[in-house]
Image: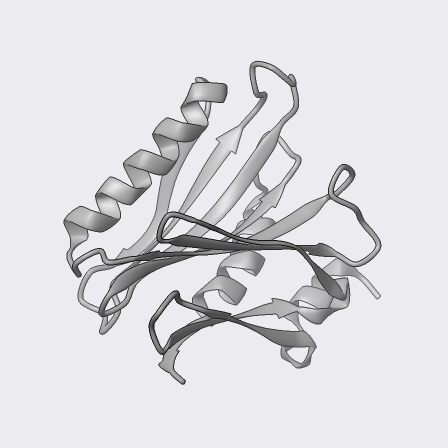
Amino acid sequence: MSIKKIFLTPLFCLPLSFSVLAQDKVSNTHWPTAYQWKKLSDSTRGNTRSVEYIPAKENKDNWTLKTVMLTIPGSEPGRADMDQNIKTITANIKKEAPNAMVKVIEENNKAANPYVLYTVETPYFDKENKAMSQLFYMVEGDKGTYLSFVSTKEASLTPEFVTTWSKFLKESDLMYK
């Protein structure tokens, strides 16, 4: 089966729920099941929680795809917080990869839960001289910001990758437990 068929078949979606700290809000991102995801990590740093998944046949040192779900509780709804979060993420990446390029793909400030979809493409990191590119989906909730993204060890993202993975990311939802 081709990768394109795997990505575009809606029956191959797996909901991976991600609970926000001390809140009843849940972010569901429906990752494609063809990868048989396994949890790489589940950590909390301050108020931010991060959960990482990689395909089952890969390991933490040798992965081709990595998905991450983050919560940033406590931020007030508003575009300024989303813009600041993008700037913070980009600044952290640029510390290790000054050549990283950020591109906003889509944003909707009028949605019930405003969101932005953007890429960060990094031809190489200074210390490792390895490429990594990411597609981010950031959405505002009532009491926090939710971020899901997919990473690949490529210098740039193909239009097909962006289209395919954007669909999965944008199908994620926020709901109360």
